[in-house]
Length: 310
Image: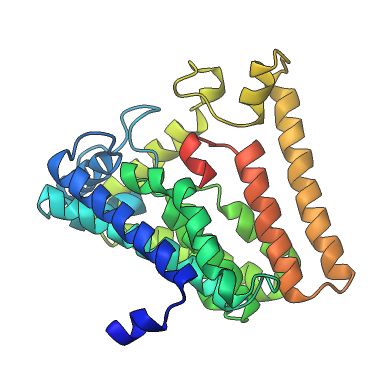
């Protein structure tokens, strides 16, 4: 361990220390104050409800993820509260930071030299810390999306389909990555993604009573389809283009905004497909896809909160 530390450059040691200290402070904070600024408390409670066969969805607020995610949180609900809080944050941090390291080490961004990796992690720190402090699931979504791109770059199609399907069951909208990649690689990814989505959905029914799971999926779809926070008070309103237009006193109807969303999504797909036709390298097409879809999700996606900006 000491030899590995000594082998690191000064520019790599600083972000490692910063991230370690930051996460340690968060672990201490949730240990002493587990119910403050902590979305994970809701996740753990939902995991308990899953084990008990209780209702997971009581309205537009509260738990918003799929029943499969509730099953994923069930093991955490069996642990002491402080251990579950720390373990969840350690897991999401490892997934997020590991995905970023994998991305950089594979050289998708060829102009980011090895000596600049530490700077990347240092710059990510202030943008990401709030998610880990609150126990958000966004780092897992980012990690799954990055892993999908990397698997496609290495032609590991089955794993790519599983990664994006998992992210979709977590927060639905990451399916946008899968749709763009399916457009670019239809024969290699399309059917695999379809099977992965079906398989994960079916797996839910093996983890609880089928009738109960079916009911929860129905309630999940119902609550998600009727949740319109663009008409809500500013505290829970989306932090996207809609909010920006309102702040600028530029009012637009919801149908018109939805047309903008659809047209902009189409533009992202066209740009990526055009790059494929123009013989861009696979890495360039994938980086463009990842970047443009991320920008679309934040600016015009269906569920942009402040934590989404990770």
